[in-house]
Image 1 (cartoon, rainbow, N blue to C red):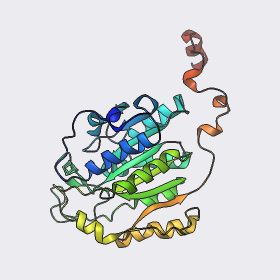
Image 2 (image 1 turned 90 degrees about the horizontal axis):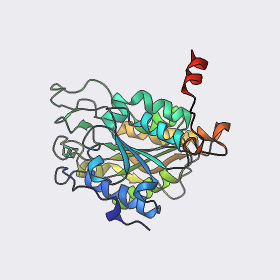
Image 3 (image 1 turned 135 degrees about the horizontal axis):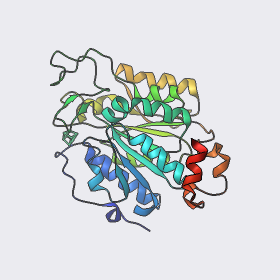
Image 4 (image 1 turned 180 degrees about the horizontal axis):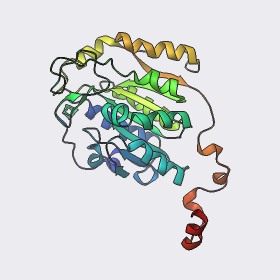
Length: 283
Ligand code: SF4
């Protein structure tokens, strides 16, 4: 049985009060509660303050290129589909640079869990506007206010075919733990959007702001109803933020549909040794 210390790397360097602290604890706790050890889970980080967790979380991990955490996670999953694979990214990384990868991971129902630190800014590069920032948000890169409307992560994922879409809040660690555990246990693509105050560069989406706008989905909420989930997700456009599993449905994952992987994972199979023959077949 692992403990939270097993997953602890270097001490985090996040700003005091940053929502990343709560998310970092929630991720470690969820992994411990799922009875995983650092060698039994694949983790991929994007670039950003969230990606710096690569140094703070002890696991088999890749600190990937900006926006490319999801394809790396899919690659690991294809190689060893029995292992849980988690991508930890920011909203800029996931919905900006990596937006295309997110859409195709959803439609492929790749069995990976994507945890998004959604703070509306590029904190690591000192606060430029990111895709979930509210229209009119003023930053160094948008001194007159951003013109575009924000990405709606929940409706984007649901509409693209994700089979598990949840939202949580960095100020409620127990809730985040429950969502991360449920996402990792879900068979198929799971997105967990975690609302995360950046206390240094985002003075709009503060803890106080979220505490007034978040609410938990009721126990009788029907998470398997697509139409209800779409309607619920669209509340985000009105700055009303549902917390919980907004949508979950059961469909075969990508690797479930590969007959070549029915008996063994790719890493368990015999390695191909005749490289010359392989090249001749391809050319
Ligand atoms: Fe957190 Fe913002 Fe500081 Fe980055 S810049 S560590 S997101 S408070």
